[in-house]
Every structure is written in C-alpha cells, then in structure tokens.
Figure 1 (tube, rainbow, N blue to C red):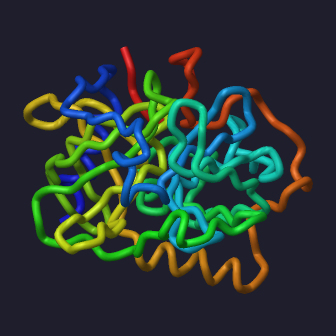
Figure 2: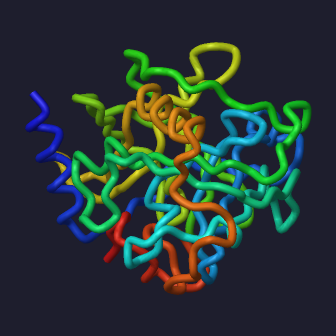
Length: 275
C-alpha cells in the first residue's frame, strides 16, 4: 500500500514552488524557550550552511543524514560542525563541537530524494562535550501516534537566528515508514524534530527530511520518517565503533552542505523545492 504516498512524494518533489508562512511563533526570549532548550542549530562548517537538530541524550544530537554530507555525497568533517542549543539572536544556551557523526547505512547521499532515502534520512552527532540535562533536557524518541496533528520547532532560511515553533500542523498520510505533513519548513529545517505533544513532555516522532508542493490540493508537503528502529540502528553503529566520520579525519569539501540552509542564498541544496 505504499504506492499512493510514494507517488505523492514524487509529485511534490517535481513541482517548483515554496511554502507559505503558516502560524510560526518566533522563540526569542528565554522564557519562550522553556521545554525547547534541547533543539538547536547545527552549523555544518560549510560556508553558512546549517540544519536543525535536537538532543536525545546529553551528548547525542538527532538530525537528518543529508546534513552530514557535502554536495558531492562525501562526509563532512565533524570537527567543523557546531551544535548551538536554543540559539537566539546570536546567543546559544550552550555551544558544543561535534566529535563523531553516524548516518544510517540505508541512506544514499549520491541519489536524489526518494521514499527509500527519506525513510533512512537520519543521523546522530556525538558531541565532544555533553550538554547537562539540567540545562537542556534531551527528548525521548517515540513511534508516531494515531493523531492527525504534530508540532515542529526549527530554524530555516530567513529565520536562522532564532527558533520558530509551529504549534500544530496536519499529518496528511502515514505509510510504510513515511510521514507526510503540511508543516511550514524550508532550507535549514532539515533534521528539525517533529513532535507529539499529547503527553506532558513532547516526544520526537519524526524528522523533517524533504519538502515540496504537490498532492490533490497542490499544497506544501514536508516528509519525514518513523524513527525508533532507525535511531536504534544508529546507536548500535556508535556502540560498535563504526561512525561515518570523526573530527579531523575528513577533508573539507564544497562550500555548502546538501540540503543545509544559509542566510545568503536560496541556491543551497536539493532537499526543498523553490521557484
């Protein structure tokens, strides 16, 4: 039964259009960030490239796999990456260098976005210095519920200096490990946590991977994946000492990470479709 959602995905990626703003709340003051301290901007070290990520342990950041590769499909040097927890107006709650990256082996950086790649577009960043839970409490990773609404907290093009929160966006479809949503995301939102807020503490149930316009109503659609099994695979790779890259072991590549955001140009990746 995956075919309808795969077709929906291919239509969205083929249509050159961008999302319209839809109820984003800027999180600028520290009191506005309560509960979101574990979400941060990942500076990739490739020009002004960035993605969004979230702590799932004091030393582990969950993000999209395409954020840890350059445009040639080569691993980025973790030593040039920085996780900036709850960054707002140039000031982060904590800055932590990245020591190790691991991307899911089911993700192929050399191929265009596809259902297979979206399902596995997940990576972990192991930080050189843990961020205390008392400062930024990590999120739990959970399976998607059956509800028709989720929440997203992200950075993006035009809002790279502070988090923006979309309290509610609609789940349009779930099928065979894929999730389609009408969340307001753009370049730099890659890796942003998709959250289930039905309990007292929000849980990460997916990540933003790719987006475009399509479907029967020609609306903007963002795509993510089911997480628990994929994250478990990544943790196992780390435990076995099989990372994608370690700091200082990868030569610096091209000046922008695939799919990452930048405040200076819209020509910054293939993960989001723009006019």
